[in-house]
Length: 330
Image 1 (cartoon, rainbow, N blue to C red):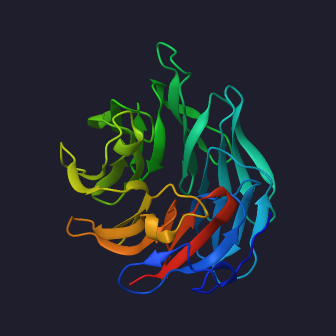
Image 2: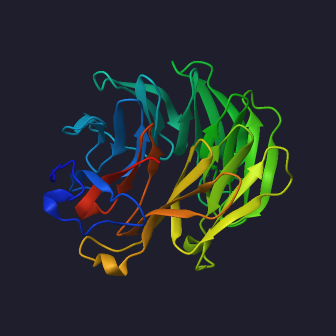
Image 3: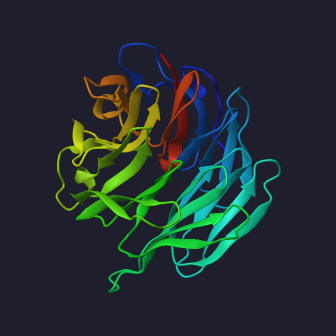
């Protein structure tokens, strides 16, 4: 069911209780939707996200959201012309291209084991297939194909729980395993599989810069139930990752923009939780380390984050009070 939409710092219906801010500008609620929101993406003109009913798009200039396709998946990615969906039905999983122009769908790859994460560049689509639960040897994989579905190639077979895929012009990066995990890379032709960091605890959300990669480890969500979850940086020439920050609130997503690393950290309140008793935040820090800056705080939930040329956007993913907020980028 559609909620209200209001481009104002007062939020939906004038209620600003869903969000608070640190020093600086108050966040603006750009969308309120009675639905769980996830997987926020961005191009030059629109935001794209998954709602419970399907994948929707919202003009950055303001206006009503539109459902692009009545379809969802385990993950989505966005390029200049299309939204790409990894659908995770076990044994019959699909990689689907959805035209931004008219929502037309094309199955690019089918009969996949369990697509779990997806990335695209100018010519190819890349995804991971999760392994079958407790099967030995593991049967997960990292896969690529040209965007028309040809030249499908299993880059790395026989993996345990591969996830969190991303790419640059040379390498495909991904994680394998959960509570004794590895951050790894492989050449785009499937050669040169290289473990970059081993013995990790639930690594998530790899982002890539020219000279380094970043990720966080979900210690708070692991069996250890830690009170903190760390964010790491690994220089491409280094042998060990550097601990950048250990957040007391559970991180959810990272984003890079210039010299800054941004992230959201979740609080698992609900739509009726008093904002004085929630601690979701949006933060940033210099990519080479330093003191984090809190951009917004007292958030009931802070999910995916994307950075536009002039603004920061993040999602509140609570099912009954989904929302997207923004702040001007300083």
